[in-house]
Length: 205
Image (tube, rainbow, N blue to C red; front, side, top):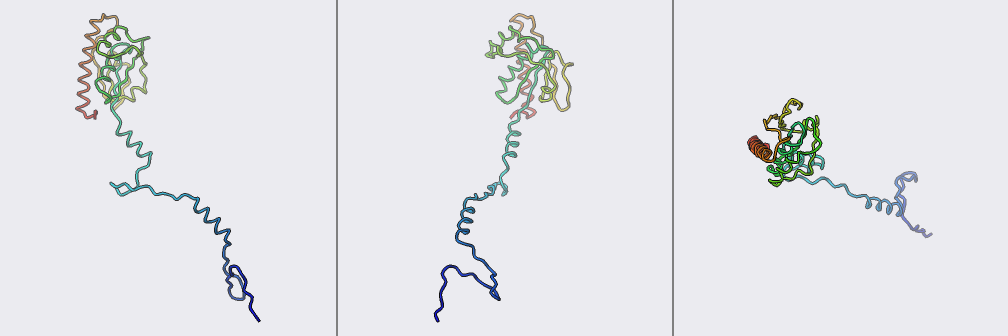
């Protein structure tokens, strides 16, 4: 008697003819392979060559970059923010060349910047024609590292850890152009001294 040979994969059997292991069909193997190929491999973060550890996350890097970019902030305050504080802010901004953030405000803001002040500042190449008086707020003071007042020191809130200066500068309100020029030059000298102090304190980089 001849034995008939069955085609196709054989199913292994255990004792007493019980099936112990089943082989997956070719269709299942192909489907599983396609799913595994479609799933992207998870990449590990590149190692930091300096520390031998994974690179910092984007959020950590942003915090580091922000800390490195921090520069001192100076706030100039006068009563109306229409003359002295406007001149001081424009002069410091021009001289600091981006190394200082500058703001100005008034304890009782006026309606516009003094036209004579605008004229005097234009003579030294600084345009105040688009500036306008801004109010003194608690948030503005909190954000400043140094607060310079001119005739309104009592109106400025005091917070620990900040530098406060009160400059005795003549008010240009109602003064002629010659007088305002003198006031401008007085403020310019004070601004130069402030910049030197900031540099000596290593607040400028």
